[in-house]
Image 1 (cartoon, rainbow, N blue to C red):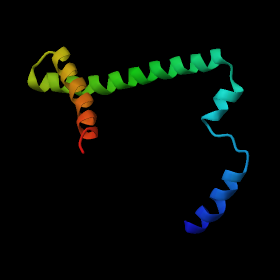
Image 2 (cartoon, one colour; image 1 turned 180 degrees about the horizontal axis):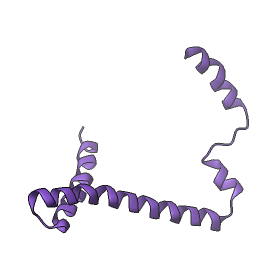
Image 3 (cartoon, rainbow, N blue to C red; image 1 turned 120 degrees about the vertical axis):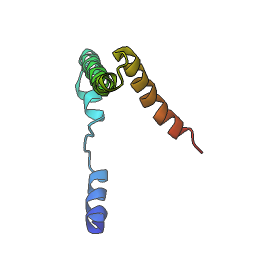
Image 4 (cartoon, one colour; image 1 turned 120 degrees about the horizontal axis):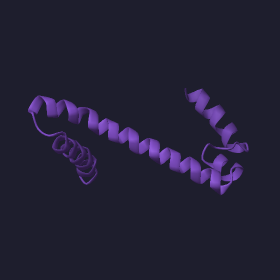
Length: 89
């Protein structure tokens, strides 16, 4: 691993390799980038919604609570957990 890091990494840093982040900015028009961003955000929002809703359905069946309440609890819990972990010294 050390040999690979000492030989391959300098070769990549010296070359004119395009990174994944730079390619859309240089090769695509702004309308295409905007469309790709909107599609990505919609997909991300749907996946997060499904990730929160699936355990909320299970909790609503087990506890007998309304789905809206368990979905709000799951959303609050999943939002507060990373925030509280990031605020620790």
